[in-house]
Length: 210
Ligand SMILES: C[S@@+](CC[C@H](N)C(=O)[O-])C[C@H]1O[C@@H](n2cnc3c(N)ncnc32)[C@H](O)[C@@H]1O
Image (cartoon, rainbow, N blue to C red):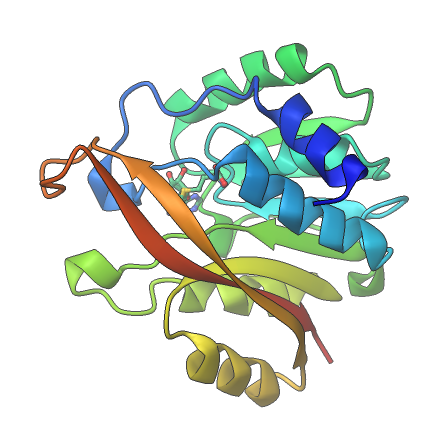
């Protein structure tokens, strides 16, 4: 891991997660290491500095705040549930990023967002997967929103999503340019988790939208 990425993960270590996570909304927060990996990759691709960064399903703000530490023109976290947004505001003060940050309570897949030209917008997101609840590809509406609003997006999906993500991107005239796998350590927080902690395999995709 590079020093810059390690430092970013450390800075994000103060971001608090969900106080009272709601299973139907798949509320678990992205670990700082994974958030730092995503933001660092985006930074290396010139997808953060000077751009508008939208975090769809922002939760307590991990990805918004990660981006905010890398000099965006503006970072916007969109979240449907007001409770984690209150935590996100506190997290903003803890992280101390100087960027222009906005928190919007809305359905991210139907939000009244009027960002500048798509070319200047990057979406970062860890959307609900829907996999555990028989609602396969709940992430589809989030990808469709990224395609509509952004020139490029980074998104976390459950294992085995490559074919779906590539086909979706191609249908929208886009292309997967980078992909990597990661593990998510989920604490026991929902009743359907039997172990104290669960590790799930995820995949992260960078899509350049056409
Ligand atoms: C897996 S969590 C990720 C949270 C945060 N982005 C992070 O990386 O730590 C998914 C988040 O999406 C939110 N969410 C689910 N459906 C949503 C919707 N339609 N619009 C906005 N947010 C939504 C959930 O409340 C939850 O906070």
